[in-house]
Structure formats: structure tokens, C-alpha cells
Image (cartoon, rainbow over all chains, first blue to last red; front, side):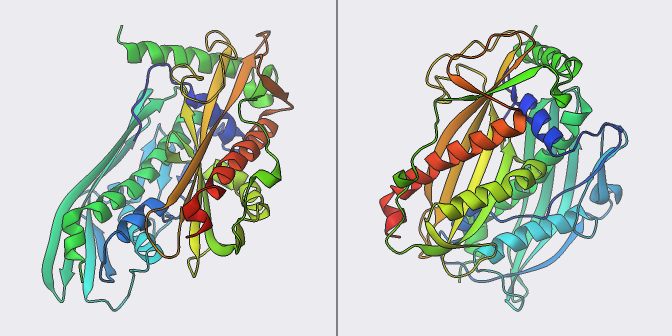
Length: 200
Length: 206
């Protein structure tokens, strides 16, 4: 993700386009539901880079002991919040993010012997005035016929220039947070160890 | 003072200026589409001998982050323009036989000289004072059905906004409003990217 740069002016266009779309948040309270995960050419290309066996996507859960609220919603400056459209769960959003990528690459098969599971370890987003930050961390496990082949914790982080205006900062923070899921799945599918685990 | 703090203070001051001028209401802002990237003749885009169907996806991004609202606003326009280009037999929403065309339009901050970064041909006007410039990078990525690396082409564009009595930029065309400016910019920058894609040998013979 792009780090904030001196003299950045990008918030102006974000302001206008969000305004065009009617997202003004002028009432001071908005619940933003992220759009459904979409596959990307980049991740599909990575998955097609070498022969991989089809896989099914198993259970994704929140790490035991973590507060349930971390999986449901993140507050963005007071009463505003961002939520997942997949069962109201960020862990399920991560699962779906992987599902759409595998499906786009022709590697998703419900009865495959290779199973990918995941655990959401950390999730946060903060549209603070000045610099906004978001971070996501998960543990992915791959088994084949019940035998472990891969287990690794991966993380993604974003940092951006964050306006003092909530009408700009809140939707931009939600957008950056959503982008982390694509980024995290991209790390997974590009990981050589993961690719070896999915090798035929 | 750290440069980032200074930057943010400057940005905040601009945001206050925009807010106080009532930009949302279109009260005192003038919007200009840069002329470095202009309309091109449709004949410049060279369809393959046998256009194939393709999956089509589009995403507007702000600083690389997906912007669902702007995506929704512009998706129909982008799809219609790609369909009219003749590069594909059919555009599909789901995976299937054929390739995959992904169009992204990224609104990026212009932090240095816009000309140096390739967004404009020359110095249309300074970024100081009550004028701002937004940069856009349109990237079209075509993933051939046979596999292999994606065929990628991109183009750049810019929109300038002035407030109050600021002078108009020299190399830009005034738009009626922001939406008009954005739609014009999208049409022009996408045409350039599609033209360059159509000239790629791997696209013509996947």
C-alpha cells in the first residue's frame, strides 16, 4: 500500500467522487458494509503460475480468546463503522476472498483432498486525522488427506493520508481496510511454501 | 516541523478551503480536464481478426484502495466503452471460456511535478494556492485464456480544480461540473489504454 507522501492531494478527488456517489456522511453516522470480494487478474495469474492441485476452502474462524467484536465491526471515528457482508464476520470475508480467487483460477473444488483453513488473528482500522492505518493478520493451514502441509501466519498493513473531514476519511479508511483482504490473499497465493503445499 | 506534518497541515488547510467554499454544492469550484490525453479516433483501436469473449471486471481505486462508490458510478460507462471498442466478441460477468479483461482506474496523489510524472505535457499551472490536480492511472490487464502472463497497457490523465478567482490552466478544457469532468477523463484515458492494448502482439494473437 502507498505510504503517505508529502503534498498529497488525493483526498480532494476522493471527496468529490464520494460526494457524487452520495456518500456524504453529513449526518455524522454511517455503517459501511464492504462490497463482496472480487478476484483479481494479479492473484489469478499467481495461482496459474505453476501447476496446482484443486483445493476446497474449509473453516475460517476468529482466533480463540480474541474479542468477538473484532470479527463483527470496526468503529471509524465515533458512530461510523465498517462491517462484513459475509455473515457479518471478517473471518468469513477472508474466507470468501480466498474462495473467489481460487474459483477464478479454476482451482476451487468442494470435494478436493486439499483443504485450506484460516484463523483471523488480528484486524484493525483507524482513520486517525493525519495518518490512517489498517492491519490484518491471519494463520493459514493447508492439509491434504488430513496431513498438514502448510501452516503460516501472514499479515498485511496499510497507511495513508487521512483527512480531518469524516466525510472523506471514513469511506477511504473502509476502502483501505477492504483492500487488505486482497493483499493478504495475494501474499498467500504467492508464497512459495503455499504453492508447494498445493502442488499436485 | 516534520515534512509529513507540514504536508498534512497544508492538506487540511486545503480541505477547509474546499469545505468553506461549498465544493459539494458546486458553488465556486471550476473543474478542468487536462488536454495531454485527448480523444482518439476509434480506428486507432485495432480489433483482433477474430475477437473472443472475455470476462470483464472494473474497479475504481483511491490511492490503490478499492472505491466501491466510484466503481458503481462509472462501471456502466467503462463497460459500454470496452464493448464498443470491438476488441471482444462479448463481455461476461463470470468466469468461463475466453480471457479476462480487468480495468482499474486509480486516483493517485500528485506529489511532485505532474509533467515529470507523465500526467500532463507541461506545467499547466502551479499546484500552490487555490488549485489542485488529481492524477489518474488507467490500467487494462488482459489474461489470455491459454494462460501465461497478463498483457498490460496503461495510460495517465489529470483533472484540475480551481477555487475562487484562480486563473484557468492553460492546457485544459473547462468542464460543466465534476461529474462531467470525470466522465470525460474516463473516456479519454480508457481509449488510450485500449488502443495500446490492441497494439500488443500477445493480445492480437493470444
